[in-house]
Length: 249
Image (cartoon, rainbow, N blue to C red; front, side, top):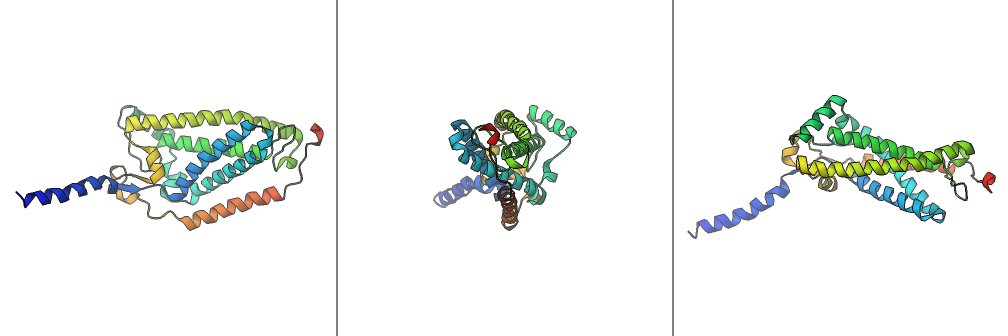
């Protein structure tokens, strides 16, 4: 009996540790940093917009952050790692319908990266946030503050863009709520923790084939694209004509 007991004792830790090793990486570091930084940027934009005109500089800073992040993610969707590229997860109506039907039946098709429904939300949020950030650059509050590119458009057009900027946030807020609810529903029906996966970059091995694992986050390329985006935005802002609200004074 004494010879059997040690064998059982040494097997237990290995069995306990197995689930931690039984995962495979699908989300690169740039995608994960983008996701959580965007959450912070959108939240900061909302809070500073509600605090009043005296917090405009902070609102503008958060707007710059969102602009850079969204522009970077669009580029990363073309040049990034496998599951970050749009070509790997954007699918047509038939695939979306088939996945939704399977999800409601409790038997969703396996997808290492974004599923077809999640892909729709990614595209919708990126599009809305891009428009939101872009219109903010040309907007004004009719009192003291204007966006950095305000002088490049007429006052009437700036007011129209400002109206879009204000109204669109309601749609963005609705989309975020749907996104959160979809994650909860997916957790219940598909038994998959998408939040943890976006934090760690890993999914359970049974959900990811060996040839679907990413081997590198391509950080050098990500940093290069980020520098390009920041440089382009800085050039636009610094070369814009001086802005003012003379007609409102």
